[in-house]
Amino acid sequence: MIDRDPNASGGQISSEPDLSQAARSDRGGATGLAYGMNPTHVRPGWQEYFLKVMDTVAERANCDRGRAAAVIVKDKRIIATGYVGAPAGLPSCDEVGHLIKVAYDERGGQHKHCVRTTHAEANAIAQAAKHGTPIDGGEIYIRMTPCLDCAKLLINAGIRHVICRKRYHADHDSVRVLEQAGVKLTVLSQENETYDQMN
Ligand SMILES: [Zn+2]
Ligand SMILES: [Zn+2]
Image (cartoon, rainbow, N blue to C red; front, side, top):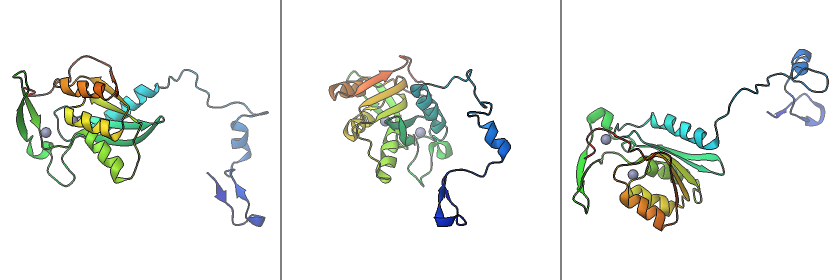
């Protein structure tokens, strides 16, 4: 911390906190003993770190169909987060239950979707937009491969790399469009994220 000391002549800027002589010698240096080294501490790698943050963000999700979350990163810095949830001020799934719609794919498959919520990826993009944070060229860490709508949003928001822990069971089209758009997709496990009444 840099403090301006009003008592110093000429208004000098000091970066030195007020340390006792004992504290100064504990900081190590030419004459003091080094303090605080911990060579056994294992730091998480960047990917693990962002995924752990994503898991923490997910605890705020208010729809238990995946409790998905998203962390948008650029130049190794977290610039936006989002979690699946009802729009601000509206009742959530945890409070009033899911709002389920059934969709059919071209192969005759049936999929149930909760439409009460905005998805985590869309909420992260909305957060960036609300605060004027550019995300063009960024990467996004998410719990499962995105749905088609979110995949299209990520493409148009300029996200260049999507990192997912698991698969979303209905990700056929989203994987295809990400590939077509040249967005790198990393899926860490081919296992499907599961939750109640997926089909
Ligand atoms: Zn829901
Ligand atoms: Zn989505």
